[in-house]
Image 1 (tube, rainbow, N blue to C red):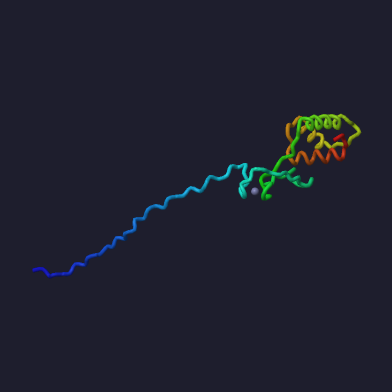
Image 2: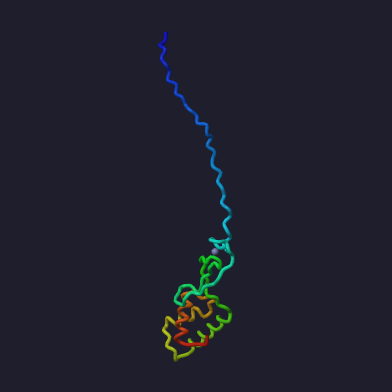
Length: 134
Ligand SMILES: [Zn+2]
């Protein structure tokens, strides 16, 4: 005869909720880069920066005024030609007191297609000092 030991029956309770993975909702498509992230407007207005500023100008949203991007100083073919002829004149003029560094700098930007903001700044300073038709 066996002792009638009561077996402990572990009573697992299964919770009825079937945990379904939550559907990942894809947020509505981001507006293209050329639209304002704030209001979605596409049109921009250009704001000129003061001469001491690193950037030439900034593009702002024309509707809400949010900053969109920096803009480089536009330089057209005419300005490039002017720069080249000015540098030629400066380098060839023995009366101008140019340091060796300045001569090297001028030669380095003489044929450059586009100047960096820093190069523009140095060039503008030289132009203010040495003179030249704008
Ligand atoms: Zn906007």
